[in-house]
Length: 303
Image 1 (cartoon, rainbow, N blue to C red):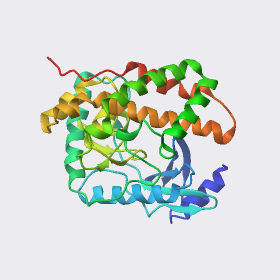
Image 2 (cartoon, rainbow, N blue to C red):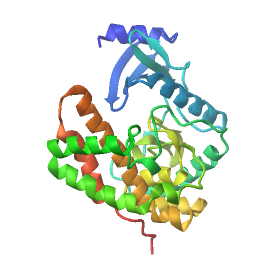
Image 3 (cartoon, one colour):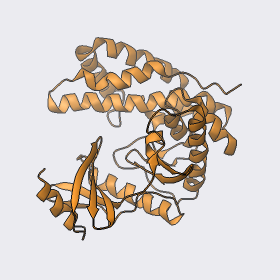
Image 4 (cartoon, rainbow, N blue to C red):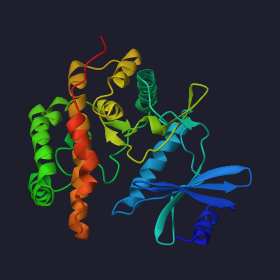
């Protein structure tokens, strides 16, 4: 998109930009915007059938956390459509990502403590429905829609496109389904979770938390699912730090690895659904997911 067009988008939020530069692309695309002495972040949301409702859900969650005093991105105004795309302009948060470079075991333990504190704040939020276009990691063994028949169709596509990846996915699926996550977590409430509380999404200054970024994966889930994603299959120090401030049941601890796998399955279904929509098969899109499926292991507390 030409710079002039981006400038017009920023002006739609009442800000006159001096400089705009690309930060990165993932689910959404972000630019850093300088306007005089002020710095902002411009986001273009990924399109989808529920994009507007999903963006509104995230915006409301961030507003609620900001009221509690959490250092989260503050929007200049709610998300809005400019041209054919959905946009958001946010005030830039100062600080450096904890994950800029290798993260020590002490760093992962620190992340666990901060996540426990965030969960204390999330506990106090008003009830809300599931984020549009999302489901829980608890139910990640099935696609968002279509149930078992649709999953079988997707697995058939995956077998045809990438037999090795399909074998790994199906083997881990069998393991997770044997754990019966929906049954294990049937009595737990669903609360808003961050969805990716990772070293690159927390900002620090002088050793203190000064920002929590990237609520792109925030949704309603059991809190153990949020810890499972922060652990990312094997960073046990995150759990050790979390347990310093907040307790978990034996069932929650025993299923952290399965909840992480549930999140990976949801990503796999989205990739294969994308193949179906576009007609373009790109097995390399699965590489990271398949690698993580192989790395995951049960939690083992520090001795």
